[in-house]
Amino acid sequence: GENVEQHPSTLSVQEGDSAVIKCTYSDSASNYFPWYKQELGKRPQLIIDIRSNVGEKKDQRIAVTLNKTAKHFSLHITETQPEDSAVYFCAASDGGATNKLIFGTGTLLAVQP
Amino acid sequence: DTEVTQTPKHLVMGMTNKKSLKCEQHMGHRAMYWYKQKAKKPPELMFVYSYEKLSINESVPSRFSPECPNSSLLNLHLHALQPEDSALYLCASSPNPYGGGNTEAFFGQGTRLTVV
Figure 1 (cartoon, rainbow over the protein chains, first blue to last red):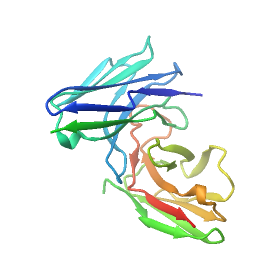
Figure 2: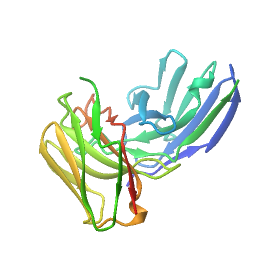
Figure 3: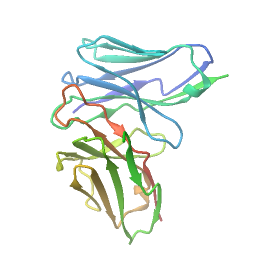
Figure 4: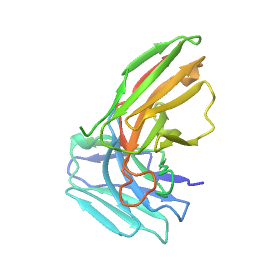
């Protein structure tokens, strides 16, 4: 089955700096890669996603890149703000009969003001 | 309505109790999920319903019993739980169980369960 690894587990940056979180996946059939942000005590919220027919996607200060050959994808946050502080999870899915999402282990991002 | 709603938000139950968690969505999504999340861990898939039929059971103990009465509702019946079952239980839904373009999963706010 699919296995998703995520690094780093914690990341501390200064406000205004960029943050990068990286994930690798094992199943070449995976074709959908969402990123979720989870603030303390709240639900995971989808912030951006990418499908396997696209190499990069951007939405304001966040972007995701996908390298299908290497089976890795990354989240990039520019001009970080304190409200970006949260746990970020990557996930992978084969979008098949079950649309089963397998999550990475999470990255705790702390943006220092 | 673009939300997944879960009730109750918090639940404390004894090991001999029977309780149910409820999840509701009115987005027309045909896949619904139960996830379990322990502190500082990622959500862990428990069950998947596709078109109101159970399509995946991730080897979950029988003390957890899911039910999907209709396309908008998902229940999780709890019986004889153990303290280690204490966790945040998240419901999610997505538009199309068979993949394709719409595979986004939207999560409810969760039920924080404590078993005493």
